[in-house]
Amino acid sequence: MNRPEYSRLFKSRSLVNFGWHAGLLALAIAMAFISQVYHWQTDVTRAERNSLSAASRALLQDLSGRVELVAYIADNDPGRAALRKLVARYRRHKADIDLEFVDPREVPQTARELNISLGGELFVRYANAQQRLRHVNEQSLTNALQSMARGADRWLVFVTGHGERDPLDHANHAFGTWGRHLQQSGYRMFQQSLALAAVLPDNTNVLVIASARNAYLPGETALVLDYLDRGGNLLWLVEPNQLGGLTALAEELGLRLVPGTVADPNALQLGLSGMDFTLAADFAAAHAVTRDFRSMCLLPQSTALRTLPSDWQVTPLLRSNAESWSESGDIHTAQFDAQTGDTAGPLDLGIALTRPRSDGGEQRVVVIGDGDFLSNAFIDNGGNLELGLKLINWLSGDDSFIDLQRQPDLDLDVELSLPLLIGYGVTFLLALPVLLIGSGTLVWWRRKRR
Image 1: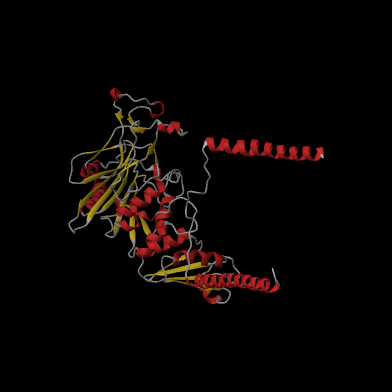
Image 2: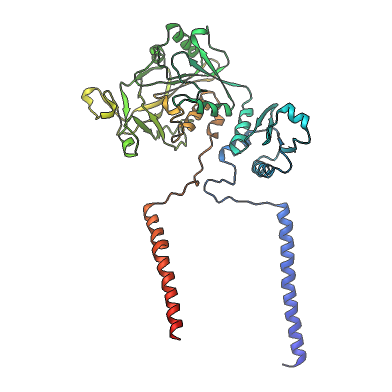
């Protein structure tokens, strides 16, 4: 090849290379510009832990006004970056969320007046309401927004004076954990002795009778029936063979208790201490409370319910499995025997009742054949807490909040099947070491032969 031809070839190749580099540079500049204008993200974790939960996203869709967040956090506190990251997730679904940071050291007078804690606090303002949060995460922020979105106060009146469970106590048999979650969701709780009140408060959203151990006086029963006649909503948690003198209330609702305690042999197979633990996994798919409910509930020492014809529309919410039965004898040595009065399953453990009110609304009542499932000792089992919160949301008429309960993270624990565990063990404990030793031995042998 002569020199002129070589020079032309070199120049042509140089032009091609220059064109490629120029094109790549132009593409990089264009991508950098586009990345500043358009943003796209995806979350590939199973529990979507880098995104808002479906409950939070549903709540943000219902918020029509602006949300203001004022964070009293020091400038050098790493909590600022964490809060910005959390709020950014909310802004992806609701743009009109304002976040303002204030260093408490720069406004000492305001910090003293507001009693700002050393770790910082967040003030959430929406719809002329305000809440303050000391521990900020998605659950606490969503609960605060949910509470303010409810508007008017929601009063839960717990009847007391008959050995009922305390919604504020932390004893194993009490409802302190459930009560705390209800307060975080915007409900206000009040304990009322019917013996000291001529009438229940007019602003009662839900009346709760939580496992009465002592009998109601006739006048107290009359107050409950009057509340029911006026269209009030009721949650009644009963225990085996313990109506607590509320037979008239059961007749008004068209309910009967099945004699005995529900026995579930599946409880023993799952390692529970006795058959008096009932596993409820059969839910009414058509009802708002149990629709898409997939968490199994654990009901200790429950009683079954039977309905009679009445003017109420009845929907079974919880039902035991076909292997269960209502044991009329000793639950610890139980064997089904119809001749001794046992009742075969499946059995209704929870029932929802509705009927139209005179004002055009709907009156709602739920009766559950157990109170232990919401106690501090058992509320964290399965879907007990979630069910308890959904029941109150439905009874108080807050249907839009029924599905806002936070689902548990699904990828916190790694669960491997036995064949997969065996496969990993053989691969990493046997096959891989043998392969490494064999390859090393082969290299050593070849070098030795040289």
